[in-house]
Length: 580
Image (tube, rainbow, N blue to C red; front, side, top):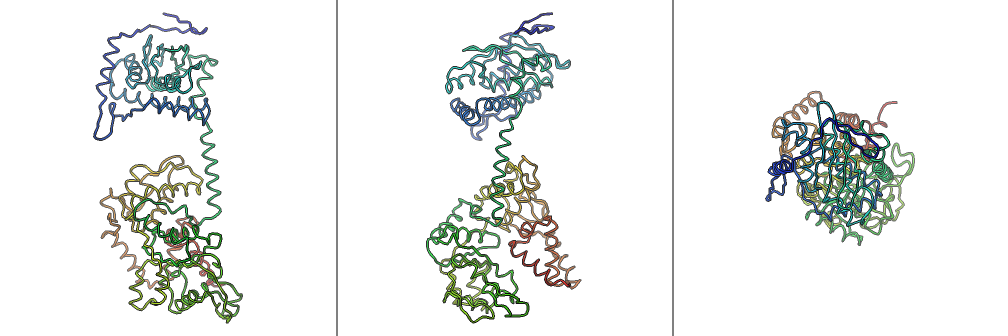
């Protein structure tokens, strides 16, 4: 039995196994034969693991930035844990490549890999390992260290260990092989080499390893920074729940064409008509126009003309005097007065009644409104932004929309592109919505998996940006804290498939397949056979959306394709109509 003395600690080993240089060379060559380059695909493989080449100067710059940002101690801990993870990965790789080799040989593969991967030249002096018994002892010499050279280039010659990542790698590799934590420490550090000892944690004296062990425990500072960031974001979103200009993101040509027109219009008072399908983000563009204009300090007032009953639309737009009609117990201003010195957004303007269209035209011409039941005209200074998801020219030809009003609104038409025409914006929009709803939910979501992003890029988006936002909101809710959103969190029902699901009920063009179409037809037939009124169907959908959203009015409104204000109006109207 041999005895070794190291700093007053007696280490006993049952055998001293020295390493044959020829055997070591043969082992490295065998591992090197498993290294292959795929130049056309940009891949480097070691066995089945993908690797990378990294400039030493780039690594040194990263090391310095970590030290400057987090401090030397935290930077050392981060790199040590990074090396530990790399060592564990190599241990798993070696177990797969060499399932039947003896214990000492499989342990020696670690130093060989460490050398092959360019970290450091490793010369094992003693390796004593018995995996079954859980016993281990090794002594190695490090020289020509990649990490040491990078450290010296940035910080100069300093006393103490510099192989932070290397120490983590050696500890991770042997721990992965031995199935127990085996700690390596640099016990001698010289300018051109270091001597390391590796032993199971139980074989080290507590005083020896206390300093080293702290680098293997994650530092709470990163979590603290992220938590503070989430609190700041949460406060920011709590100020205004409605959509903000920050939701307007994109870089595609179709998006930039529309956005450039909005930017040019912002400097003037010109009336803007936003055209596009439902859900493309017309209100977001309207808000962006308002915030970029000289009226940004004024109010932005939005009204969905199609969401208000015809008998109330004029009162909502122009205001009402007390006693103007049954139930008008108080005088109140309309949307035009509330938007004075600001911007009025008229969404789905094509849904206005003929009477409302006539009064709207007068307001645009005269710059004044008359409340219902009043003869007094009130001056208003309002910037009008209108929106429609139908062809207003066709509505004019059919007699459903006034020609003179169309010409007053159509001074600067802006076509907002559907999401299928700006697919390169999907990653930007998804990242924005992940950030937004992670803050709202108080979670830290690490983005989307590659498979989830591929599914989003392949989908046809019949519901446009609104559908994407709803989907990401659901994904954030269902994803685990700290993890990424998977495709299963996004597409939950057969009516929302990915392109990878050929048997699903929506095709790649966003159209219902026959199976889904039959389901819809069955529901409609059932509703008609019961003689359900339209109001009953609307109430059923609203109740279902509120239940699914857990009572969250904003989330339910998005499911129903309407604004929060529209849904609250319907709920309020329903409550008012309920019997006492």
